[in-house]
Amino acid sequence: MMRVLGGVALAVFILLPLVQAVLLSFTVTLEKDGVAAGAVGLMNYADVLAAPELRAAMVNSAVYVCLNVALCIGVGLPAAYALARFRFLGDRHFLLAMLVFRMTPPVVLSLPIFILFSKLGLVNSPLGIALVHCLFNLPITIWILESFIRAVPSAFDETAFIDGHSGPSFFFRHLVPMIAPGIGVAAFFCFIFSWVEVVFARILTVTAGKPITMAINAMFTFQTDIGMVMAMTCLSLVPGVAMIWLVRNHLARGFTLRA
Amino acid sequence: MQSQSKWALILVLPACLLLAVIGLLPLLAVVNYGFHDIFSLSDVHWVGFDWFADILGSDRFLASLGRSLLFSALTLAIQLPLGIAVALMLLSFGRFAIWGLMLCALPLVVPWNMIPMLWLGMIDTQSGLLGPGLAAVGFDYKFTALHTWALILVMDTWHWLGLVVILSYAGLSAIQPQYRQAAVIDGASRCAIFRHIELPRLSGALAIVILIRFVDSFMIYTEAFTINAGGPNDATRFLSLELGEEIKGFSYGQAAARATLYFLIVLAVTYVFVVVTRRQEDRP
Image 1: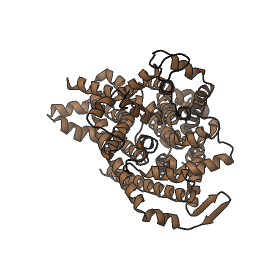
Image 2: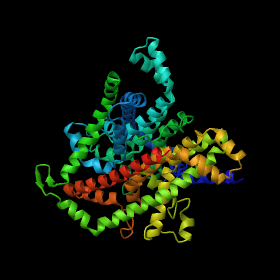
Image 3: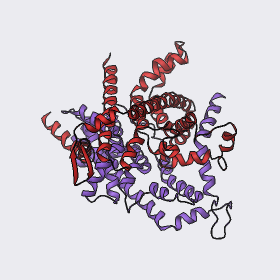
Image 4: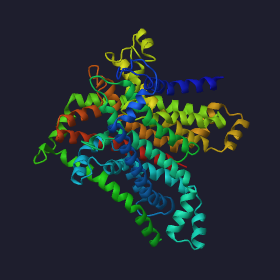
């Protein structure tokens, strides 16, 4: 009985703010085009999808998040393999350095990152945001992948090499399928931390390339159409919810501190 | 061994290069700016430790530091036990646990700038689901400091509880059932099982949670600023809000010095934490 009550309390606590958003997103809150305020329907969603700047924002967000996930996995996987399998000079320091970068607050670095990226021509481009989000996502990727690779017995590698597989062929044809859930979980965490991040996304998009978060901010004006804002917010949750669904069976793995 | 080490370094190299460019380089730049007075990028003067002395000597800084530390302490004190409790509860749900985990992960995918919007919408006195009820009992987050604090804490818990739950659940579900069965047969109480079997195996996951939650709550910006912009009467003026003000006021030298100080605080806490956890691990 206690368990049921606890479960219900948890569900109410988590869902209540979202229920409010979903309800509002289906309600017309600002009278326009002859539709009175208070009408219920898909009008807000139609308005969001009809606005070119909002559509562009969704594309921008999707592009830089995908780039970021690809970068983190591509760079993180070899590093995680090295940390899981080899003892080398400075391996413990490397993990500690990772930790420090994850712990560095984005506000602290926002100013020099902006100056550096404007010199490199990476301001207003999705690549710039994708790169800078590696700052906190790459350490997380390496942690998760390292713990998944460590769970594979090293005899597995040795057998593959004895069977005559070269390094790259072993990597892609044996190791990657073996730790696919780990890659999924790492991608999930990169995705969510990159998708929802605001500080870097704001300073690196001055005139163009605005992501969803900034597009929503720009919707707050003198007369805010709150129903439309909520419709945009609900749409921005869709990819995240899809990611949660994809990795649901592997969500609870990875992450141990070995610094 | 020699060739192994060489391979390892080649594999780690891309990650190191990337972090050097986007992490180390800007960090050094910030420290350097902190020693200068910057009007524009072409008009820069060396001022030595002036900014640091100014900031460290001001009462406002110390007050903000106290508030941020208190906020982090409260966040951890609420979210850790609650998260572990929820994880234990989910564990007892068996195969339905996965639904609970997905539910808890939901707030993690909400854009950060929308989280305060969702909560402000919910407690809006006219249209909010909870607003009229809260207004009836005298809840007023705009002008009562205690209520602002409560709102930000509840909101932060809503946002981040999922992370604590997921990682605690990961640690708990890795414990082999034999351990618990053996303890039950020996007549151990639920508390004893938690204290001597579950907690020690959770420590690795918890270490990560504590560090991540400490830093993120210590540097809370977007959520806290949107709720009440540091008010009422500076009661929720956290460290990051002061930094944000200076950046917006184009006082870059001072902002950089402040950023350096914040980084040093975070670094010190991380270092102490890692040393302590290592000592615990090394203990036989």
